[in-house]
Length: 309
Image 1 (tube, rainbow, N blue to C red):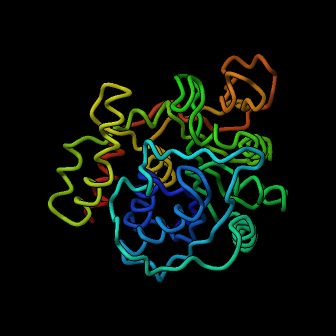
Image 2: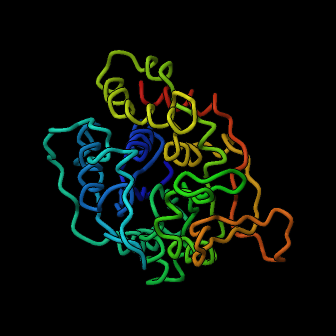
């Protein structure tokens, strides 16, 4: 099975990404690392442990805490979308049995990637702080990772936290810049251009049936659906982070083009914008596989199938 490390700031869609990764049965999940983002590092770690307990795999998968703040910037949470607890109120009051493993996420990433050279795919669904710190500590890491797949950015459409910036990129653009320019041979951007096309709706949730999983998804996404409707006029919610996981499961779900991508870090209006050079105007070597299209039906067949397994 494909070895992966998940790096998460566990809010609603990160949790669904973790569930897909575990329930798919196709990954050797080496560990999950946590980072500040949607919620605090402490809450992201607690939520991750809760989800693994819910899946009854808490004893099998280590969870390692990482960066508690961006490289240079102040904290910027997304409680309006994910709720104060990060899971939309689902699993509220459920005790956490699992404890995080001792260590620091960037060190965990470096140690395991070097120990399994060429075998580990990193799936990043939060700000890229942990990976940037890992690269700074061990620049040669880039030659030992099989692939980095990250949920973040938008190259053709509008942002979701500013007019031009996607949340993960906006929270720590300096970290994203480190990762973009580190020299990863396989770096894949799963951005809003495709994640907004995989919209979980009430029909999908009904397919999960009257089960603990169905009830969890229904409860965790309830406010999420309402907020997406208020902003976008569609009663659904985008499966941002599960799509990043699904791309690791089946790359054919998306169409990509290798392009040069950079990120803005010093703009009053455009901080966190992922700038994609479609016309090669900058004459720079392409550095990122950019997802530009997705088979939404195939994604949901895989997602619903895994969660019902």
